[in-house]
Image (tube, rainbow, N blue to C red; front, side):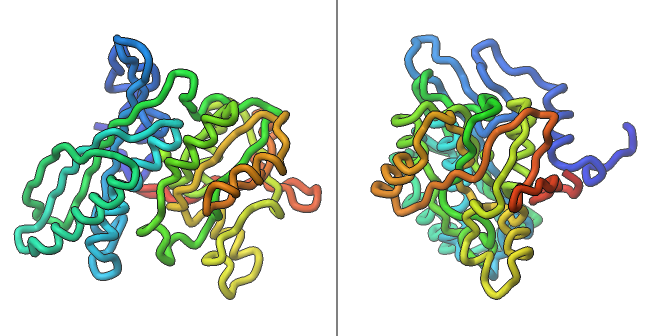
Length: 318
Ligand SMILES: [Mg+2]
């Protein structure tokens, strides 16, 4: 034992440590480190996607501030968002719950109603799970299986200098409510992979100011983001000044929008028009992929400022 605490190293370095301790199976094409694992199917055709998320009372929700329905919705929504990020469709999920003995049955019924209604929307079956007693608050863990055609799989690693960087929807202010009621961008992601040669994709769970760094590492590139192109959510703008709204858009987290990398050859107006005629959600180009050495920057009136790596990180430092 080294004596280091997990709060000293942070979530991302902790994941790096885990990666050294386990091994992905022979049929695993992509293991730890993307939005979902990718497993080859021996009978060919479709690839299997596999992902899980855990929601913990006090970390992801507060009992007084979220309804059980919303907690259920969010617990499945996070994983569906990861399946979407891979370009796939969800097929089945298992739900495991740790609940204090004194929790009312009606609470869990409502929680399951939230899970069920979201699952129905995307044709995802709820096929099992586990329920145990928790001595320290409510914990919900959802694992989702999905599938995607080999040629439509979108990883974090495919971005190349010159490509365009796009996001769906708007960023920031999720804590005002969207984080409990967001619609995972499953349909939007499918539309993108079915119509365009998507180079890389991930979902924005920790905030653009953190997730850009994850994709940059996977693709070995950097990004230049044009500040004035960022679609800042009205909830982040509120009554605050431009700087504060920008900080929220970069670092609030839990946007559950898609960060999408498309080849430079596409016509922006055509893509936007086709997308917005179909969805109740925006799609905007926000910058370009650049060489790794140029760094991850925000460009404001032609002036580059390095983006500080931030956003939500479990256990402290990123
Ligand atoms: Mg993700």
